[in-house]
Length: 247
Image (cartoon, rainbow, N blue to C red; front, side, top):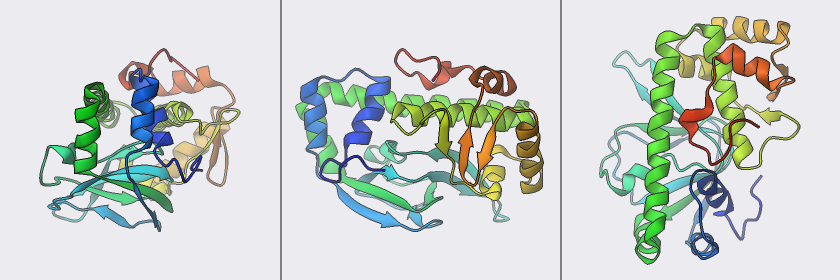
């Protein structure tokens, strides 16, 4: 849930603080940046390949994905984004989008004009470094996903992804008692980890049978963090979270 609709940038600030130390003045400045809030249905396009956006989006509620399609129409999900993330921050510097972003679940999204982003960075130059660090962390996550899809088996891939999502959601206060919401379908998980939906279903069943995770509808509970880490061959280094190696 959005903490306060009068402070829609609070999750963005919390996310940035997890990877970069911000001063009180910088946090206040970010809170004052104008935001246009929109609600989206699941499977709704936010930005498409070839677009020339004049704003960045931040996720306030729900999950979105970055994806590309093959010529045959097959989708590869290249990133999942959670509240606090800004999945198209690079549009500040890359004029034409080379990927698409869509909602996975019903979402609340905040749009910030590029000019407003540039203005706050000019007033507070350290924020430029903070946003630059965020794009570098995104690149680090892309590299880890490439390794995950290319070299790990299905069981390890999914366990690894669950480790990552738990830590990213924990950073913005969306994990309680090692439980978080994962509003993805099996088809979407399949597109993210490069296996079939049937294989996803079987793998989740095995993870549950092994006691690594518990699920109830879209809720995932991790009863033993270390077991999930071992199942996913997970090292949180690539997330570059300040002073955090686990939940």
